[in-house]
Length: 233
Length: 145
Ligand code: FES
Image 1 (cartoon, rainbow over the protein chains, first blue to last red):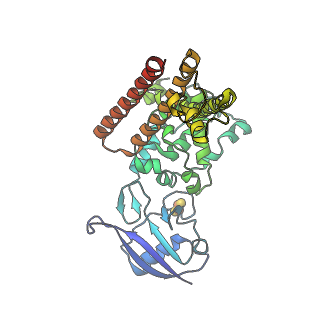
Image 2 (image 1 turned 45 degrees about the vertical axis):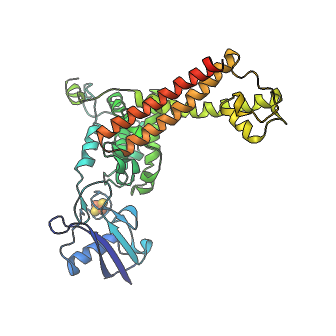
Image 3 (image 1 turned 90 degrees about the vertical axis):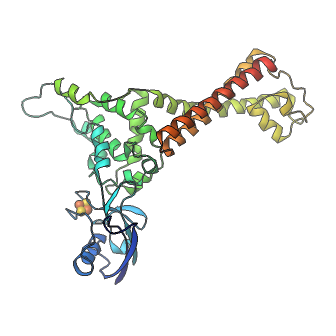
């Protein structure tokens, strides 16, 4: 089948502003949008720039806006998005070129919530054991691949990049509710500030955008609850 | 805690203001609806039924003062004449105003990008809020009281 692919392109060294370029590609219904991008780059226009690494929805490199929705290009099948496909770079982050955005502001917010195990108690000889129930408590938020689809779908984040954003809160949730971790109060204090969870107005764009199906808004709600009640469960 | 302390020692205000305001917004939202409902019920029990039209009842719900229901035949006492209704009306008004102004503050914070402009707008908003509270104190406790 023939597919029309419209890509929002921008090369800061040549273009004053972004423009739409249209390509026609032969594709199978079971091809992924990423395959179309690779095909265009290989056979039609070598200057097209995008990120991808694993090509299997694990690394989080190729989140883009496909027909208005934040998706991983490597997970979207042509049969699901239709014959006319519009692809643009993630919103809310500076575009470096074509579909490649500068992820640094995103990672800066990620680092701000201390995304690592904090526990200064002497480690046992082998490992810090955890019950299956305690592990299940934060299972959902361990699935995050830091693709930025949620954060860049959030109107609060578009409005102000001071907001830590849903992805950082998901990562914080992953440690706050981990019973081996001791840094919960520090993270909750960071997220209780003006740039933290209160910027979330439960719009649910993040939940809709997450390619891993994480219940992002719920995770944010659990963090809000932990802050207001002071209890972590 | 050597490692932890070094990592955690980061610029932070530690302010709980946003948390309190968020919580206040939820609670006051529920509270002022209940308080308004109580006003309507009370007005009807006190003889408003048949004397006040729907518009007047609505106005009465959120600000029970006589010239809101002038057109009706109902005898509008207590009209802030006893401390209970004075405090009740003031609380209702204060909750509603603070709830609303805080909402505007949050929207400004989300959408105004220039720090200086944001600071000015917030100051203006605070003055409006404070003015409204002062006016309502005057109206309820001094003027009508
Ligand atoms: S290329 Fe790794 S997630 Fe799509």
